[in-house]
Length: 257
Ligand code: GLY
Picture 1 (cartoon, rainbow, N blue to C red):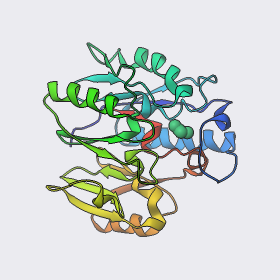
Picture 2: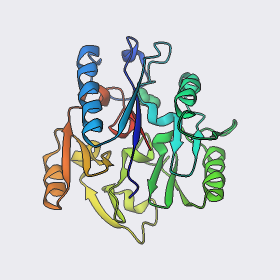
Picture 3: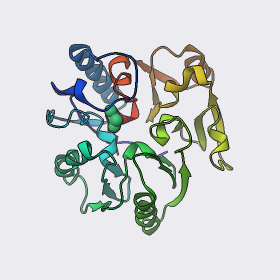
Picture 4: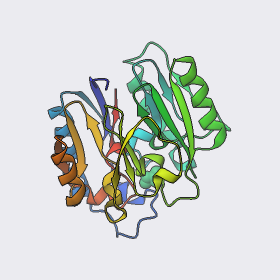
C-alpha cells in the first residue's frame, strides 16, 4: 500500500448543521463536531502525514466532507464534479490547495458527476461506484483518466442498495484485503481480494481508513474493532457521532495522498 505523505482536511463551519443528510439522528452539535474534527486531525498527524487544514466555507455546509472533491493518487490529481448541486462550489478552493502538490490537475466535466466517496483505491485498481451522486458519465470519465494513468478500474452500481456512497460499504486495508459490509459481495466481483465482512448492525464501521501503520475506526463498533485488533492492525478509534448525523464517515473528512 502506498505510504501517504499528506492529507488535507477542512474544518466544519458555522453552517455545518445545514448540510445534506438522510440520517434521522438529530441536529449536530457544532462544538462537539469541532472537537471530534480536532481528534481526527491529531490522528492523521500521528499516522505520519503532513496536514493541511483548510478554513471553513460557510456557504458550503458539507465542505468538511472534503474527500468528495478530488481523487488523488501517486500518478494524478482529478477534481470532481459532485453530484449534489449544493456541493459543486466546494471544488474550486480544494483545487487551489491540491495544485501545490501536483504539476497538473484534471477534472470530471459535466454532464458527468462524481463524488470522491464513491471511489475506492485498492492498490493499482480503483472501484468506482455509480450512486445517486456519481453518474455513469462521471464514472466513465474517471475510468478513462485512471486507465491513461495505468490503473485498472471496475464500476459497481450501488443505486439499488442503501449506501449513500460506495465507501459507505467498502474500504481497502492494503495487502489485497477489503472490508465489505455484509451483502456487498453480491454487488460486484471481488475475486483476487481477501474480504472481511462487517455485520449489518455495525455497518457504519465499514468506512474505516488505513493510513500508513494505522487504521482509523469509528468508535462504538466493538465486534469489528476486535476483529481488526485480532488480525494485528493498530487501530485509532475516533468519535464520529456529529458527522454521522450528517451522513459523513471517516474517509469523507480528508484527502490522503
Ligand atoms: N452530508 C454529506 C453529503 O450528503 O454529501
